[in-house]
Length: 526
Image 1 (cartoon, rainbow, N blue to C red):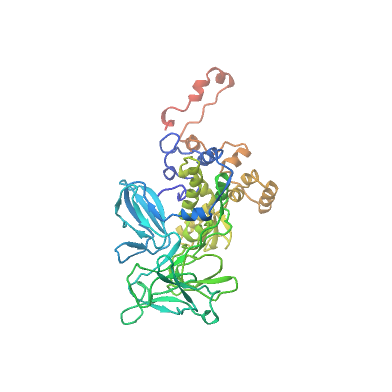
Image 2 (tube, rainbow, N blue to C red):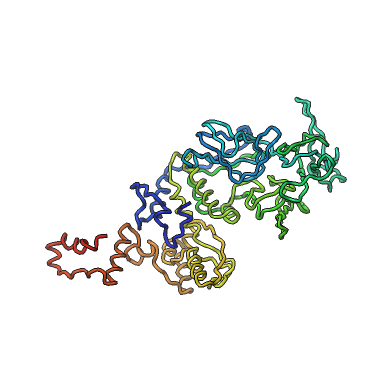
């Protein structure tokens, strides 16, 4: 799909990727300064945004937590990144972490988009038609279920009453349930035990998880609630245990202009979400005093990844579960740099566009996505070289993305190995200072430093942008007539057009209109 961010043009954006000129209603003209239009479109409604910080959370918002997805329009459901199992009631249960539900109208356009949490029970399946106002998915917002992907019989492992588990009876219903004790609450004998639910067949043999050679064994974290007894029969899609989710306390939500500034400056949030660095199976290694060791072991047997996570962080994953690269391991505000590194350019663009749009939407302002995408394209202008190949770049060097692309194209055309690189996300201030043009950077901030570095490095400015051309007093390389006039100059230099007639001052004063139109007729008017 064409978009401003994914456009392959080396300098600027092609008209087809930008699309419609929203002021005039037709395809954008060649030479239009879309960066200026984008800045004005984002900046003008920015004058109406509030500067306030809102406090949300606490007990009131816990009761109002989302527990279902209700679609607003009619259409068909499309599930992406979905892994699911069918439970004993014949309903679809989601068993993947980053499932997205889209509502597609009859023309194939996406009308609505929702995140479906792990353990949600779908009322409608993939591809089914729904009416407006219909509920398509339900889940319990206060607990996270442990869903089994296989059928069989439950076998308790290391679940010893008084050491690793305790039995609690609900006074209202009279139902008893087992609660797994936290490692801090256990006796000395239960410290090294790891309570788990194993699934076996009728003969007592281990049942394997489909697609792997691992036995279906579900390790239970502290505080997990089990409402099954040892030896009972279960079928795939059933809930084995429930893990209570901590209610989020009072947290500040930065709204309005400061939030937009945070997004465009690509600031890292205070306690960001922890994402899985690689795909693989989750396990927990030796704990230290305040941290637990998360280990992700790839299925292909390559090097496992280890990370130390503070114990107060609530984890969304449990031992033996399979995660994909970029899945959320512990909740929190997502850091755009992590999204770019683990999920790619498309995902980080979508994240920034949606977050900025949320701020403006709250104030009732409509902005087209392409304006925000123009800014994101500039934020993604740099790349870090990972291996130089046959190029002149140095490993670890940060260079302009367009330069790497051009160099790689030339190398591959000559049958050589191009450089490999990873895209970088810079905040708008940093991106402005890290531009190729030192004149443009000097006009913005830290003038002395920029000019000193440029002089020491013997830099050369190609005068490609608007600012540097304004500063040196040249015509700016933009405007809808620019390409046409540039083409005329090129053709005149090549001798395809007659040279402009030489005119005296007297003639110019007498007949200005004729002279201005001279040479614009005939073959010249294309």
